[in-house]
Amino acid sequence: MRVMTADIAHLLAAARADGRRRVLGIVGGPGAGKSTLAASLAGPEVAVVGMDGWHLANSVLDRLGRRERKGAPDTFDAAGYVAFLARARSR
Image 1 (tube, helix red, strand yellow):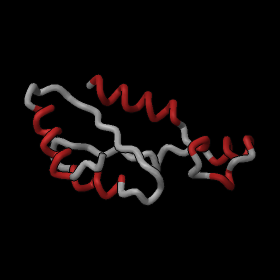
Image 2: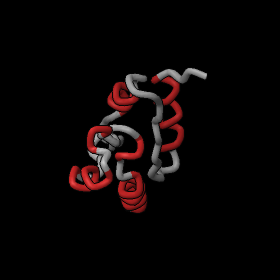
Image 3: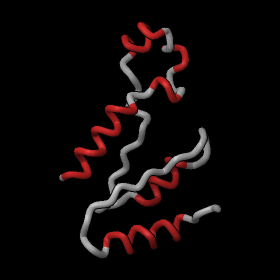
């Protein structure tokens, strides 16, 4: 099912009605438009936290022999990203 930006904006507005903080995950393959969609939803009450800044350190990637694959799913610090989101959600 394809969801349009207006539909997501409506869902976000409805979710905000109770004043609680929400976390929305946007997933998809490379070039699918995730960043474009997220940017269209960003605003004073919406922060976008992309995964691009959550690569493992180059020294770790070198040790694992994966630096040349930087950007592949196994080169991200998924645990660090999840911990960050948990902290952000609890504030």
